[in-house]
Length: 130
Image (cartoon, rainbow, N blue to C red; front, top):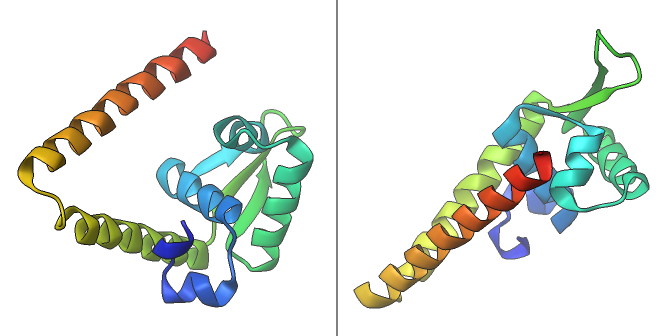
């Protein structure tokens, strides 16, 4: 992730765990702390530290579930959305740059591998939810 950081995220000196959380929240709008730990395979205490640091940077905010006050959710702030969009753009540009160095056969192999991994992760995630 470090090579794919936007100028703004580099200025914030975000680490790969923080970037991962920001991109997850960009995709999901909000997640509970438990969901964040499950998606990242980070222990709860470490996730708390990650979210604390992002909250200090005013990139995320926490809020309670109205139905269950024990549940805490995390979402991006407006600044967090801007950083997330910048990160996503940098990652996309980085992929485009690297893919131009591949011939068509190599691109086909690459995309087939990504598709296979995507299917595998989808199956694994759905199996864990049952």
